[in-house]
Image (cartoon, rainbow, N blue to C red; front, side, top):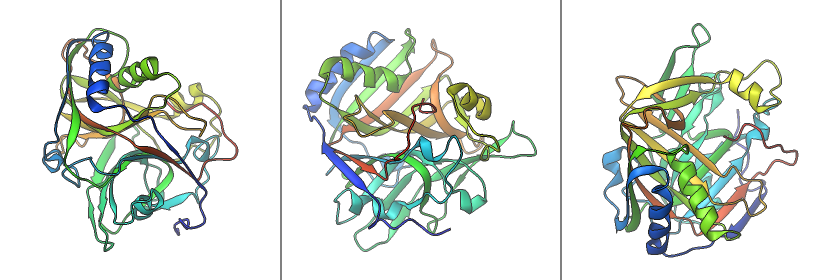
Length: 321
């Protein structure tokens, strides 16, 4: 199936509030302490994230969030011709020399003739060449208790239906290093950060993206099965359709969030990850299931802008957890 032309897709964008990393570190330190017994948030030089399996060494330089398509293209019934090309995303976000794309989305269903989860992780260079580290996770109709995580080839750069992405020049530089242990509150790692920023910055939308690892403990994830033969019309329908799994650490997660939607019909947080290749785990991060054992370590950066690509005209709010 052909890509949608990036030149004809509607795009909106807005500048985001950009406090200093030091200010955000102080805010997150206080907020995360309400949900974890041990917290450390500091501004550091970004380590080489290629050692974490990423396609570029850093998450710095001309930072953007991008929300592509949306859940309304997946449900109630899928609009299957919503197929985008990740190679276009940096240019759409006004990065003319290429860029590094990470995040969460729906994978290229024509590649395996099946709906799937995707962990976008691709570095597009100015000359059009790329470094492809994207993974997908898929289920099997023969046994929906089984699933598999697999690497996409360099030639497969499609993204179907929806995506929530952090785009940068892939440079090293200053980032937030966030460490948390022993969850004492009800919120997952990402929601706690997002809601903390919302409480502190109010009407000023603050966006972030990056990568984190669950170093110890277990994690609840889901993997989408193939497209539902019946319309999905509520969160209850969504939960009955999805396939949920508990997976062990270590688990590496690509993550984006924005403190509030500035009127662009956004999915305000979305995180997908993968585990040990021998386990073949991967999918949508929900939360840790062993709060007394869990340990998180993440590196995040602030986004300067939010880009909204191909916003659905007919929308709804279910299915965005």
